[in-house]
Image 1 (cartoon, rainbow, N blue to C red):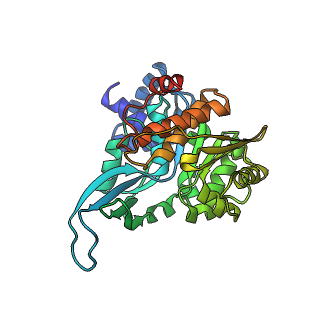
Image 2 (cartoon, one colour; image 1 turned 90 degrees about the vertical axis):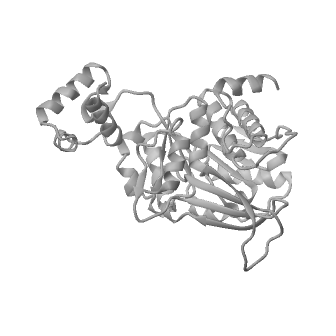
Image 3 (cartoon, rainbow, N blue to C red; image 1 turned 90 degrees about the horizontal axis):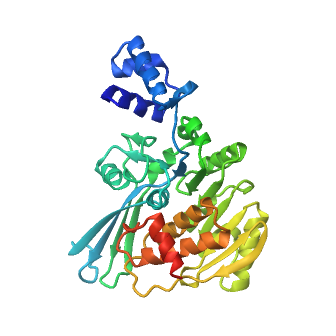
Length: 364
């Protein structure tokens, strides 16, 4: 393709409903010249039918956070009111983004929907993500900064102070997503995290249900559990940790029977597949057609960093499920990826691939 054709494909990828008038003005070419270019792209099989729908494999759509995470490691005990010597590490994070990169590395086509600033932090996220995630639908806002999380850790690794700058996600609204309704309608799976406002989570749940698209909810923290829809009919997967389940269900969970009761409570609210993670104690699982069961975590001899292990579990579990694995086998894939990610210094382990994960599971 030449440069004009590439520009046309980029524009249509972001908005399939652009008129020829809008495209010709944006490209500074005549309407007849644009029509000839579009005709050529249709003959090449790059564009199919009205609304200029791009002919490509279905995507997984991840909606939610994409942050820059910074950790300040103090060299000595904290001293208030003065500067403290520290080493700083920086990584790209965000639940939806992390899950998207895991799925991208596992061979899926993934598109991220999020809001971000027009700043250096977004450029950092873009550089780290663009090889695995389609970023054409990001809503960049000049009046907001990109989401960030900054933590101060003492010499033993204990958290001293954390600061979360997440206000930009309040702009992750139904109106923004409605602009991409045609693209979202073709999704093979929609995954949403609870960085999104509640109205957005509810809107996307109903949208997925109306289009019969599998829909997964992944919380990000206990305080944001109030963004869960009241009605969970149409939720294909809910994957949360113990604290998040306690907050959502207003119950204490500290032994096996409590985990089982919590899983059943979510199933009764309409979720098709429920997973409550319990860290080193594994996961508790329930489906609409199988009794609640427990699966132990894989032992990890060396833990480099816990960051990203939960998102690795979600990504590989959904990868296995989309590949047609039974639920138990898909969750084994998730547990394996989580274990290997714990041993990696990276939030998303760089050696991850579908072939690598399959070999790791065969070694069990």
